[in-house]
Amino acid sequence: MAKLHQWPVLLLAAVIVLAASFAVPASAARRRAVRLHLYMHDIAGETAVQVVKGTGPLHPSMPPGNRHFGDTTVMDDLLTEGPSLDSNPVGRAQGSYVLAGLVDPVVVVTATFKLTHGPYNGSTLVIAGRDEVLAEVRELAVVGGTGKLRRASGHVLWRTLEVLEGAHYVLELDVYASLPATAAAAASALALATN
Picture (spheres, one colour):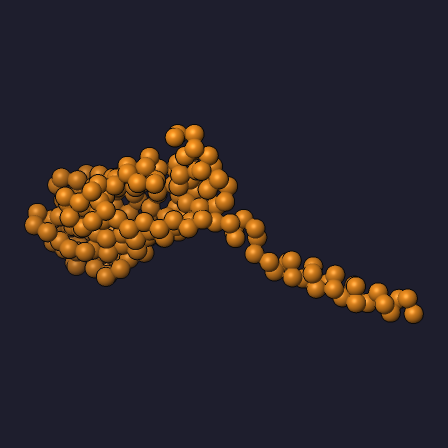
């Protein structure tokens, strides 16, 4: 008879073990969201300079023409808080992009966003991905970061807001990233140490 009373306890223990196996890991539950809204000013011949003329075929659909598969551009673009070039600067986007589509107008982007103002001053985000330049919205990956953004991951929604005279491309960037709990704690400690 005593063994019959042990079944509810054993059943409860089994349910607890099963529930624990499906639980979200504590580290995943403790990620801190990072949201940034920036504008990037890519100005051909000034802040974006072609360093390699691709030896591939002429690209059939890439504006403004005379572009070849493999063309490589290095950039050091201003990041601002508003769409105007005169808006408050918040950092620089430094990296490169390569015309990587033979048919589609696609560039592969690798860039480091060095932030110079605001709560992430002195920190960086590393961005990489495929930019189908004629699409209204493109999604690139946040693959890392340093300083207060150490070990960031997430994505950037990348839009061409307007093209101004002189091949000045204004891109609107919405960054959706997160930091692991350990990186968030380290960033807080770093912030305290620097104040």
